[in-house]
Image 1 (cartoon, helix red, strand yellow):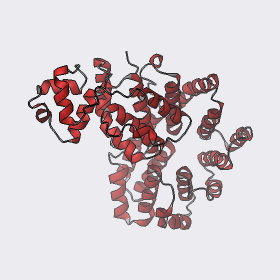
Image 2 (image 1 turned 90 degrees about the vertical axis):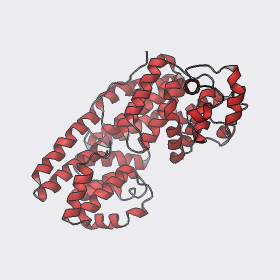
Image 3 (image 1 turned 135 degrees about the vertical axis):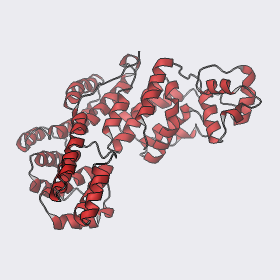
Image 4 (image 1 turned 60 degrees about the vertical axis):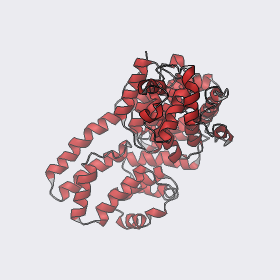
Length: 420
């Protein structure tokens, strides 16, 4: 998922400054179809209106004049789009929001009614639908199509777009970018309780993974109180499970076990994972390895701590066997792929291949991961590897490069860049 945050920030600022929100999808419908037909503004406006007029229409800066409706609708095959505004659109957005809150799938009839429609409303519904059915590739295509309409989104549409984009980035372990998307949401005063609930939930989930302590302590009680006030008691368990995983970084295993003993609804696997995390952060890697063996093939989070624990314990035989069959693993996220690649160079390549990898990937400009403990491991391991081969200057460069990144991940950034 290619996200140019500078472009996104500029589009959000334009939205705040202009406040030209689209109420009828005619401008975006024309823009969608024109791009789909590979037509320039000049080609589309020829014989109908000026290029400037069409550009302003597409960007919702003017209302279309009646005299231009027939030729524009005919040119783009949108004869019914102006008159037929789907009355169920708002209901469909509410349905997507509810499904996102309660982890529910969606039936295909949600998007079937929008077949043949090409405007930002229909594309936003499709983006929500693809996210719900976990078709990440199609959801990301919708993101690419929708990002240019950020200045024209209404508050509800804009917030839902930000939440769904955040989910896509979260799945890629790009938590800092996902968190920044949520900082663009409008003031809570103009949002529904359901949308606020989703924003708070995803702020927390990102903050957990980045170890943003201040954000967690500020947002967690607010989110829990909202769940209680709205009667969503079934959702309390999910966020408490995530919270205790976050606590595992700071508490010793005995205290964590005492906390888990009070959480009767926690599954055996989730309980074991929390304990394993606490053991990992207290450097009890042998116990982590024993706990991980039943789970690492089916869970990317388990795989990550299993790989690092095997390496820290120098279990080279088990590590080599796992790396040789890594393509057989059922679930591998970007972070676990990164670790597998790192360990293959560390143990499978020669000295020059290893050093080239460290310079290209570890010291390169490429964004690696927002998993705090993984980035910390890579920094320390790369430093040791450079030092081992007597490249001390580059060993220092690793620390100089990564310490500020780790600090930024843990910082509690501004929780919202609210609109005026």
